[in-house]
Image (cartoon, rainbow, N blue to C red; front, side, top):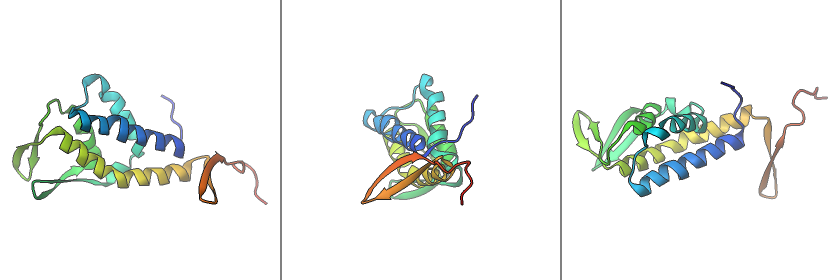
Length: 150
């Protein structure tokens, strides 16, 4: 397996794929991840979040209650093993069936902060740098990398 630094552009692309191609589609279809897609879902989570989801809790608001369901990273991965339209979730000791699309919406809403953190990390470690001017931005390789700065 080759390990490389994720660029800002690659992480952003993975995040767009995760949110729009996987989660939004699952919300619209009221569906779960099939067995064949589970591995690619795990890879996409890792790349899109760069591990930043491990420091966040999965906060789930449902039926006038707010529940901490543990690590966001863990819950996001558990989502790929739900294989029914209304999986049973433990909400403070009470088992409750929750429509899968409600769980996907909650997952999406919990991903925004770790996605921002992952983009920030990718930007810091990326060979790209953002150039601003007049409100527009472009990316270009860092030409100073490896050169002595005078």
